Length: 246
Image (cartoon, rainbow, N blue to C red; front, side):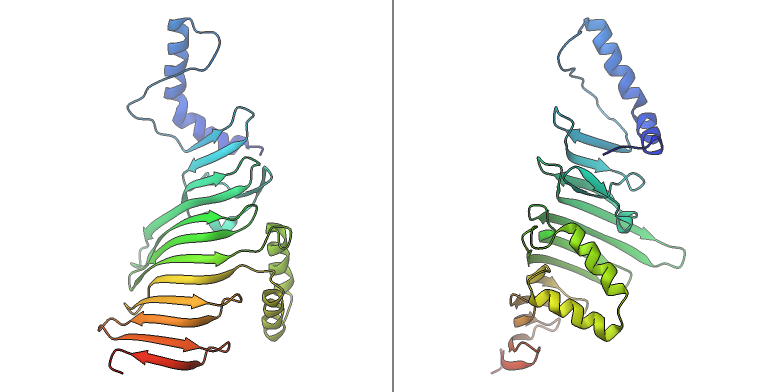
């Protein structure tokens, strides 16, 4: 990945004092070869790239302004939707995104809160297979563990997902719905299989889903303590329900 001068400037500005300390350590000790070890009580930077000896990035820790896009085979792919997040990105030995942690939290002049955190673990060269998610605003908060079925990358690549979105945008609403259903039927999309978490109305719920992401069993405890188990058909209709009072 090529880094622009605009990206490098704030990083080197924040790391200038660290560079001086490292240079001084090398000069005073007379070290010429081999790794340099330095110790700091505190260091402030905009972004840190952890890399292998060959330069392959393995972990990126970054502020919001310099947060990277996605990575596939060492090539960075723009992700404007990440522009409001800070966090860290995991990469595998081949330079593919392998998951990460992103987080944000702010309140605007009107008092609206936009906050959340997402920790994800990806399938090889694919999207997230597991996610720990928390979102909240001034009215509600939701937390969940998500487990997903993710297609093999040769079946659907990250580039394919972008192409699907571009093609969908050119369709009418009815055509768009049929288009995505066909991709799901063909096994081209990631499908959520398990969601365990809270809901906006303060219930706790466990949803178990089929291979196409349709909820087939729902275990829920409402805010008032009422428990219920529901079994649903492929259309989302309840075919059997068990309540604590039954």
